[in-house]
Length: 215
View 1 (tube, one colour):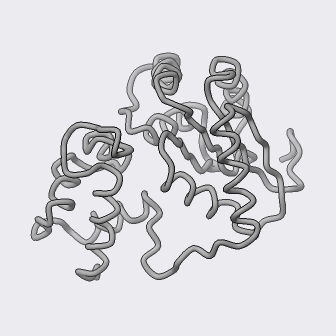
View 2 (cartoon, one colour; view 1 turned 120 degrees about the vertical axis):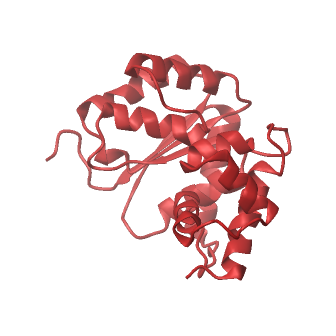
């Protein structure tokens, strides 16, 4: 069961991301509509969570929002030396529109640093890749991370993503666990890199021993 305190934590994070208005402002990362798309829930659900109208919101919906935003209700992030190093690398990549590839051993907190950076900085697009993704799944994840509804052909979705990123100030794309991508989705990265060169920073994370073409 989701407690009232946990609901308050989730609602507070929603307000931090989108405020209590329907339109995006410079103060917030998303509009409520964009945040609803990112979460895969209705705009009404987001609005009611923020407004404290919780009576008709099922625990399953709270869990979905918590999981999508990666809100940890029981743990706090420790700023280790690795965490601070990765945060600084991401900051430089975002400020200077550079691409940084990170490859290191599993279990040192790379993904946690990435997620924290996305939560705490504007115009950061974070996706965590899955083994089962095909190219279209990857494109949809990129759009959802931006709060854009994923619809149309692959080409239309790619163009929509590129057009959106070009409108952002100092955007940063974070591709976590990139080694899980299959051939087509992996190769799409180079197309995005070429189209967004010098107008977008990018950071890609993979496990240390990954080699392209391994099964």
